[in-house]
Length: 188
Image (cartoon, rainbow, N blue to C red):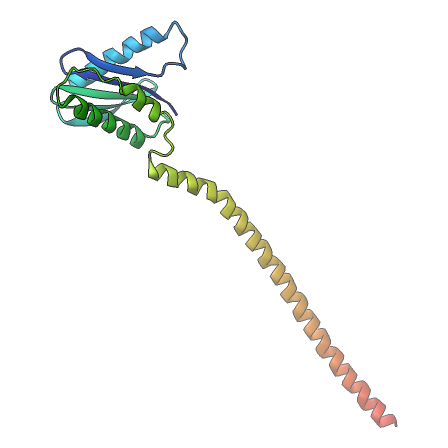
């Protein structure tokens, strides 16, 4: 799960800011990959209508695009990264940029690197994901508890059978003891 890049660019214009974590790529590939990310972002921002938010698969990545009237933002993630977290990161990026620049597109936004680093680990950013992880942790424990309960049920059934057998034997013993007592009384 990796958040690869976050890009801000003007519509029909230049790049505003990019933050990318390209450590997974070779040193000589990083420049080319960064250029592809920028070019792809510009194409996406110009192709989609204003006020749209879209997720687009691109090769081995998912691109989340948010287009505003003057500018747009794109978040590149791998396919394993949770889409809800990527959308949240994109929303934070766009919101913070609008707050900082007061709607003036084209101003630099150095906080983008901080936002990228903040969302590298999706844990803690999506409550649904956190709850799902907790459920996934609890499932094996519950399976074990069910197996133990089933084992206890089998033991209880065995004990019940033994108890019934002992009860029938004790009734038989009581019957034989009464017969023996009667015989002893008759003999005397």
